[in-house]
Image (cartoon, rainbow, N blue to C red):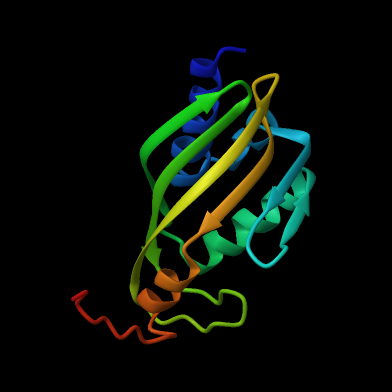
Length: 144
């Protein structure tokens, strides 16, 4: 597949499957051998592993939205800079719902094979996410 086709797969994954909440697209867009790599050596395998990740975030943020800012592709790899946003209404990794609106910048590296995402490295700015949820307090000091 061309880099343009690979980018189109990732756009559908982020816009339709995740933001529009269309889990029926999992079979079409996620490879059987899919591997998800998240923070803290977090790893999930297969379509069921993808469902676990998606369900945990969808539970915590029922109005979850992704906004793509930039995509770059080379070969079968697509890098995407995006913003994650939603309202914290459910438990997330032991953090009780805060009801707060959150926004966090992330970078994803996806490997596309035969029109499906086979591997994903998702680098979420956990610190800004926890700050937005009110779990940690950030002391900002102007740079001198």
